[in-house]
Image (tube, rainbow, N blue to C red):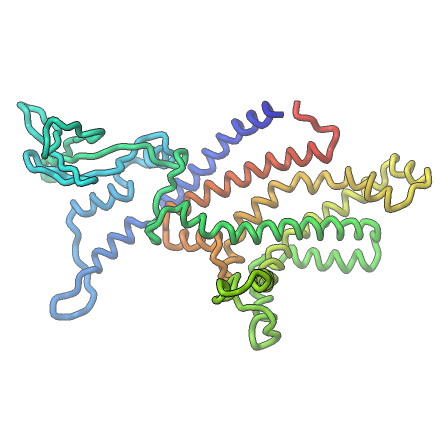
Length: 411
């Protein structure tokens, strides 16, 4: 079993690299990124003299080059991808320096670039005998003027494989910190919706199979297909209009996942408040997801009930409940068990529109805002997490199949 999971994880590496590279390529090449936004903001930063209105000013080429260096656009895209993965070093610190002039760098350290013959040596400006650590220097030539400049820098491995997803351009905070703040909310919705979807689909699928071609079957099929055809966010918007506004029935909150004075509530009041805020979003999460599972459950059970061993069980005089729930269900549940990983991925990665509708500050809302604002570190982090959740979900599906299907063994 351990060997199987190791092989499965190794097989997912190409899928992970391919998926992340495609997203990385699209996002990096898309116009309107943080570099363009920052350049435009700096151009509009000055005011026209005497007019008091926002005007545009040209930026020096050197300033644009520094911006490219800061955002990582001074390197080819394949190098940017390897740096983002963490398998190629990036410049963690970088400063311009003039030969013979001390330069203050990080940690209150001063460096001095000393010319020795035709070459240069980097030393500590305060004490030449002290080591300079991993600081390096290089020459840079301006292609237009031919002027030679000098730079000191420090390199380090810093990427997703090292656990560093960078800092958000918009929020000015580490990406993992932002995700950690919002992830618990999305996990709560995901787990509740996952449990409800499987509970409803299994029970409703069994009832539809037992009442096949009856008015109950036709009515529930219409409701199931209707919920499947309408996106969850659209259902959420309708629910808000019907049950959260003064025009109809203002029963539930208009948005959010907790009351503004939630921190002042007692334990029971907190549980009730959170549950009350969760009702409409949970319905929107669950409405479209249980439809496919319900029809899979129904069709699988109908096929299982036609098998010879089920007829034999009935012929032996076993009770109908025992035959259905003990003998038939074990084989009938296999198809929906195979979809566990897919459903987990949908609940985790497909929630941004629903969170947007209900103004829930979850990871989906964060990713939506990051895409709109071209906040690359958050977009890439969300992509990695979504791919990992999907891949892990597929492994969980295999494990669940081995549990419910005795014919499957990890050999």
